[in-house]
Image (tube, rainbow, N blue to C red; front, side, top):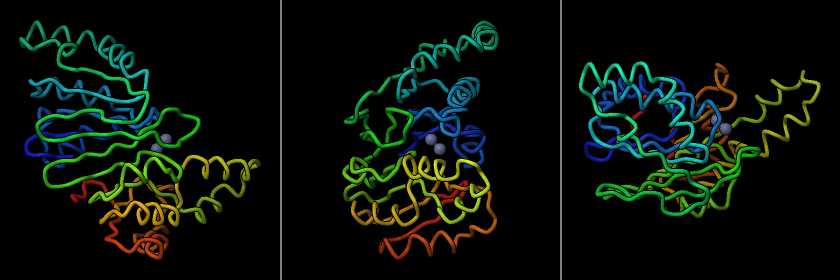
Length: 255
Ligand SMILES: [Zn+2]
Ligand SMILES: [Zn+2]
């Protein structure tokens, strides 16, 4: 989320700092990091993003929010990188990152943060076995954007997303998954696990319709890397259930 000259990041999967650079955004413009839950495809580069921003041109405080143990993770990450941090403080006269980075742990939904540009609210979503997992809503002067994180269809998310301009939602394509897991001995159990923690293409269309959002952006495609799952396939699976604008998300896409 870019609001004016401030950058807010939702989730820190592999390569998030590099993607920001490729998107033409300055790491030092980072003002907030919002982690939805602690699966590695959402948090693996949480510490790296902060460290690389600090080593680049970060001069202003950055708030981070997410489920526990976010404070401990932040502390331990800084400790792990103690050599680099102490060297740069002594050598380059940098501020201690521990004073710039302010981690906050969330245990429930509600207002998370408010600054002069944006108001952020969270809802607890359903992504077992990880509890809590959050969706986030950003309201700025000109737009409201909601990020689902990983979740099965969630009433709390629909409430959070009510009337939003943009809903960025995860999606899975069950027929391709069923083919993938067919050879697994526990196929039925695996299928149920996926349905308990993620949202199918049909369901995401219904969620977006029920919430009354203008634009639905699909992301976090499961299964990923399947060349047969073209944009047209995703569109055909969702469009019958959502009449608003439908965007098939891709890396570095600007909405
Ligand atoms: Zn997850
Ligand atoms: Zn995920």
